[in-house]
Length: 163
Image (tube, rainbow, N blue to C red; front, side):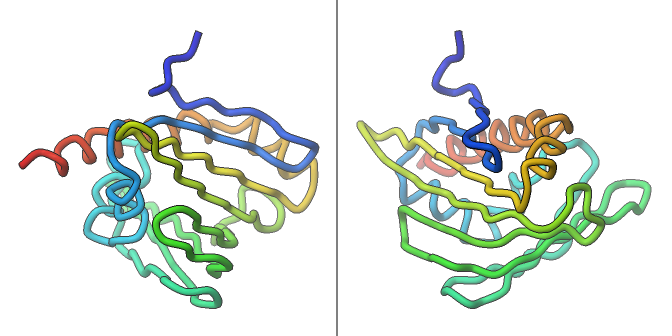
């Protein structure tokens, strides 16, 4: 049985993946963790040895965002997209396309934050261009990477919330 702090990943329909996780933090703080570069750089992308070297955020529909990472051996990875919805502190929607595509096409990523009793439930829905692209992602180590990132996010939220 999964605890609320465990990342839950489910397939939905034939082109979507839905990930949920509960954080012991208010929704505004979780929102800030996704929309302020100084916070995002502290947790996004969990594998050891990777550092975010570019963090260009967008804060209104139509704006482009860009993230780039580098690991200790110099390997680089980047992705970017366009914001479609930006409704603080509850909903963020944008396209996502990797520079070196490991799945075909781009994804539409929707993040919804709901708060109850000082805890925030994050629901992230990824919609792919095809069932084949979604299935490739489900078979990849993506779930483990997201789980590590969200564990880092939880630790950062706890540290940030302390006076």
